[in-house]
Length: 192
Image 1 (cartoon, rainbow, N blue to C red):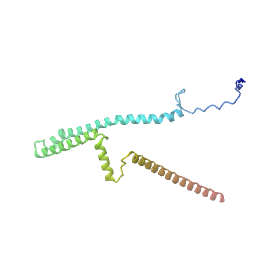
Image 2: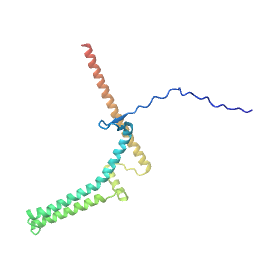
Image 3: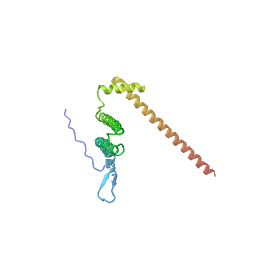
Image 4: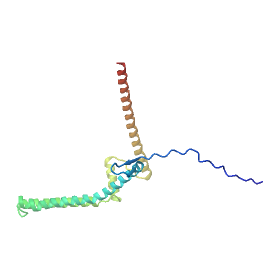
């Protein structure tokens, strides 16, 4: 027994088409043909801002290092070329010698500390030891294992959610109180 299958009947294209999607765009008044789709703008703008911020911070680090180095050099130059000869009578006088020794000591310490701050890495055993010591001094229970780290992150997220819920409830109560106050005013106005 063989059965022949018949193809399904063709439908007429008379069924209703979905309504066309609205196209929301930002138009620039002075330029006629330029339209920026708002949906595209909303999805691309945060990514663009994030990329710009990352590049800006990446470039800002070396710029600030150069600026700080220039400030240190300018202050040292001001001392040795202006203050020392003019006010202290040169480094050969006892007062000038003492000031020169003090300024050199401070200058070496500032340069040494600044160089270490710029070159310090936040990885490795020494960094972990320092972080744990700081945590102990502050009374913070530093997570030791991966499970403790997961628990810590979950607790932190729970605190954030709880705080946001509390803020939302306060805002709702304030809005309800404002609505009740407005209704009372309207009732008083209607009674008058």
